[in-house]
Image (cartoon, rainbow, N blue to C red; front, side):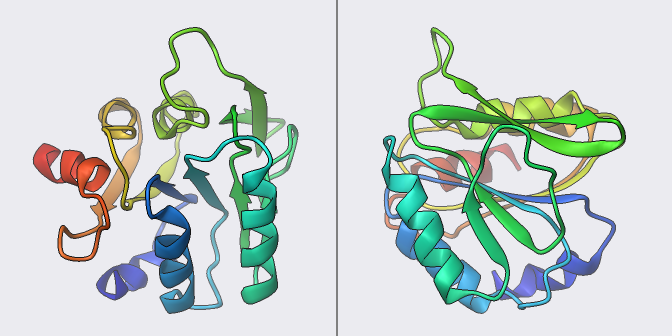
Length: 180
């Protein structure tokens, strides 16, 4: 992942990270190797049940220089802050009065993952003039695949997937790699 850090100072509006099985350790490694001067809001979807994402955010917040928190409905996205999607719910982003704002909601019928990378990415496709840097890390399944397809059509997107050599489970990043 270190090869891509020069892109963090590029023309991006957001960094979106999606992960599942093995994700907390992968997030920690990614955050450890990331420059502490990240000038982007970071949105993280980690497949976890309700109650666990708040402690994950707290642990990451203690260990890194930027603010890491569990996302709440109505958060204004700030550069140098990370927002963890709340377990068991969905995280989306909307533009409100010119600013990017989080929308936290209950999962809809048919949502396979709670939280879902696809739901977050699809919401970003509805925001005009957005430039998104996306990282898909370790995890089972294919969450993120459809969202990346939708976002690619509507936004400037640069997507990176964790390698098979480093992923605990290559399902999610493997799906991203097959799209390239």
